[in-house]
Image 1 (spheres, helix red, strand yellow):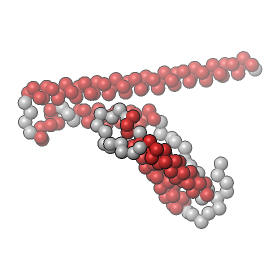
Image 2 (cartoon, helix red, strand yellow):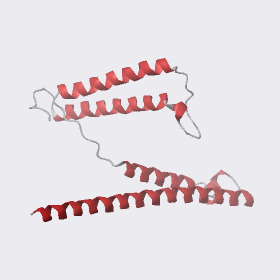
Image 3 (cartoon, one colour):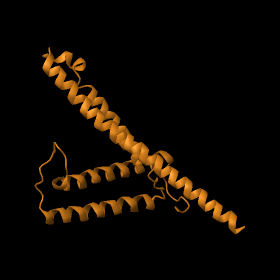
Image 4 (tube, rainbow, N blue to C red):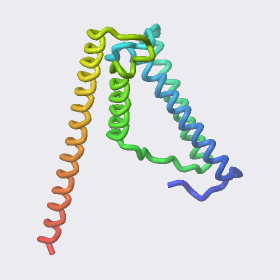
Length: 169
């Protein structure tokens, strides 16, 4: 818990400092991701790894030190750190929605502005879009069902815990 506030920053300054620290942390996460590009399964990688393993270790140590300084900065200004509050499942669902929209835009009716499409190409694009959308929707359904099953399990555990407490009374 953060102690009593004892700094000259007003709430706007605090918010800016906190936001900037979070932004720096995000950029550090991007750097970490780029260092792991060789283990990525991306179909279209953006970066070619030209960093040696020894360099990676040094970079990771600096990242750790920068993050430590970010935390020290916020603590020194008595600024609370917001806990993570966005469920990963929401991010996955949103990205799957964007993928579904991108696949939809591969259909011939969305390609008219790029020139006339031969019938065979139009049929092929419809098939490509349908395949992508089908896979995306299957994954989204899986995520929804998994979340529902987990919630059911948690509800049953909670109910079971309450009944045990009632039995002890």
